[in-house]
Length: 459
Ligand SMILES: Cc1ncc(COP(=O)(O)O)c(C=O)c1O
Image 1 (cartoon, rainbow, N blue to C red):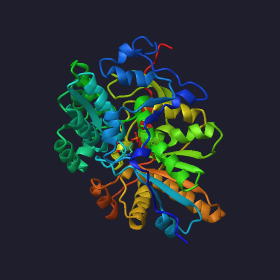
Image 2: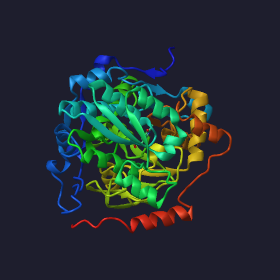
Image 3: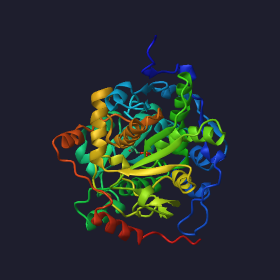
Image 4: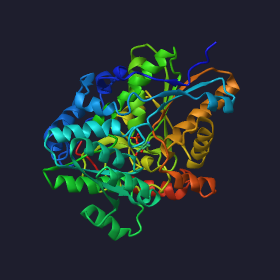
């Protein structure tokens, strides 16, 4: 008898040619994005200083599908379709009756899911005649992805890398520079937003919110420069749905339907990319998976944040989004999963969480590193610190299945490898990783203070 496969692969001509737009199928529409000055819903003109028209139209579109341009598909084919793995060796180590599958996005040029949206964002900006893109990066994955994407279409790329990450991961800077980008640690003295933070906190470890303020400020001042965001926004989540669309085809090839989907959430894009096509199938009555987001307990926006209008950045330059937030000026502890250190959550994920279409849990980083090490020792892939959160939750469920005897099918997004996160593993292996969690009264006090600064929209 042939053993069940370890890798489920798709041919290049099976790669999805359309992105899925969840807005079309939402049981209830999400609250609008508001202009901070007027309190009115923002229109395309309000976004034109930062984004090209194609992306603005995608942001507000309610079409169910958007065609992926051929020029984008060509670049996607460098690594897509990505493999789906059955985690036989992890299952065996856990002695679980559960069947665990992981969709591996670490095969991309950056080593994560981020190029799935970096490539179309660079493409549409180049098409609009833009010269340069600015951005933030937390894990370094997004900055790498955008630098790679800009190189494909002849754009310049300038990246503000969160200070904690800049110090922990010097090789991310080298990788961004190799692709042709420039990198600054954030907060920097190159922007008003950065100088204001440095004046108040000279030793600031930075945050995604601060780095976003710096990148937005530079883009807003120059019509030839646009800003690019690696998560949170509707069009970003939509670009990531290639992950879930492929996973659906791959699971069908082995005759499986998932009982549980788990993914880590920073701004929500890899999780949404995996989950949204499966939610569509659930709403159509074709399957009924539980969908579970996993966030770090040091930055638990979904499970402990307030559902309110807030800025996407620290300095308060972006439109107001209704989302689960810890307050735009909350600076999370410098945990190793830098990509999960964001004060808010994508409005679409927040809306689905409020509508009880998905669940969320928070995990401390030591449990996640333990899961990452077990995964590396069994499956041979060293995961980025961010998806170790999803792995910890998958392992937790598989252990529950061992107790109950349930043969659940668990699907998780292994959204990136950790080959440039070895300093984090070194810290863990030498016993130097601390847990910063919600039980820490300092964290709670910092969030309570940040929530006092929430903006008050006119509505
Ligand atoms: C490897 C990796 N995973 C997850 C994330 C979190 O982002 P998102 O929730 O948008 O997938 C990041 C962000 O930088 C990342 O680099």
